[in-house]
Length: 100
Image (cartoon, rainbow, N blue to C red; front, side):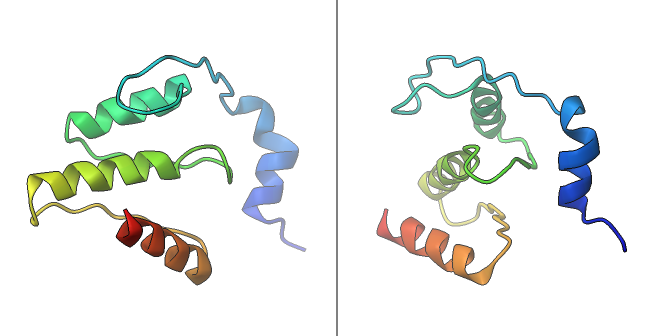
């Protein structure tokens, strides 16, 4: 049987994945982000594109919300693409965005 990508990562590649959380204070957010989260915020502020891939509950969504907020503040022409694995999660994120 073919092994899923997730199982492959967990079983054979986990030791290769960077796990340096290294929290760094940042005035842009109301908590202390990990180094990689701060780097994502910097990329968003430079108006560069980024693809963020990390496990569930790693802290990706707040960066997406940050990017969405930046785009909305600039006008109606900007684009943020947010991809989620399930329709339920897409609906949840959309509801949170509209609520903000």
